[in-house]
Length: 129
Image 1 (cartoon, one colour):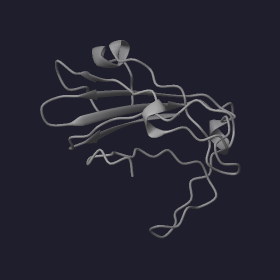
Image 2 (cartoon, rainbow, N blue to C red):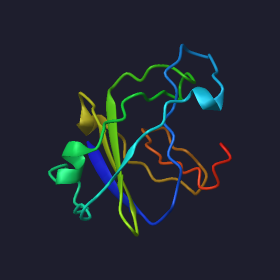
Image 3 (cartoon, rainbow, N blue to C red):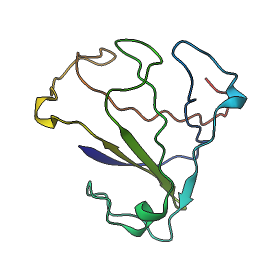
Image 4 (cartoon, rainbow, N blue to C red):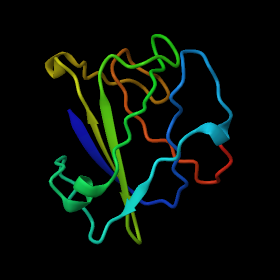
């Protein structure tokens, strides 16, 4: 399962830390994620066959939040980031041995249903909030 998002934003991009469970590191210890400048916008079609996705470095150091905070996820996830003059592009591929068992639940705003989530957080003010 994977998804591509196109967002209009200017942002500082920081990748989460690779740490032992429950350990906390100062924000300066987080390795930065690198966004690649796209010579032409990728097609937002859920596929990774655009040139920019072949050359953008993969982000693979993700941490799980629930059911246990700051643990190693059960399944591998890769993300790649690109940008151009107008947009920020995020390509996420979430590997799951049984994608047909992923629940597709709707919920009210600000309520997290009991299913898988992938989120993109942008620190646009670079204040690490």
